[in-house]
Amino acid sequence: MQQLLETLTGSEKFLAFLALFGYLTAEQLRKVAGYQPKSLGFVRQKLNSLVAAGFVLALPGRFVTQPRVYTLTAKGYTSASALGVQMAKRVRPSEERDKARNRFFIEHTLAVSDVLIAAWQLSHTHPGIVLSRMLTERELQRK
Image (cartoon, rainbow, N blue to C red; front, top):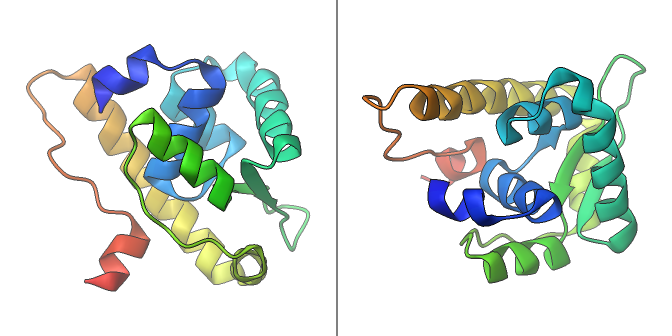
């Protein structure tokens, strides 16, 4: 997966990371993609263009303090699988919006994503540590 991500461009990389992690904020996407903190505006701009093109669904927060959460649409998952990221998921925008209204689901999912991002970064900064498998919350619920 690491070799695949090194060859992808900005937008393609965002699609791959969203397919891999499921739900991410712009700040989480900035971290996992390896951009500097001052690049958050660039990340938001890329995400807005992906939303406008129909690849990404922006889930609005219920509260002012809740960040906007991004996830892939069916078109986004199709594009990500064409890039080599094999993540099959049925997407219904109405169900995704219902999930976004559940504050506890979103908070828990984002916290799990933070842990997965930290594990991802640890495995890439320390060659002796290998992340052999990564299960998102959705995958754990199915098992």
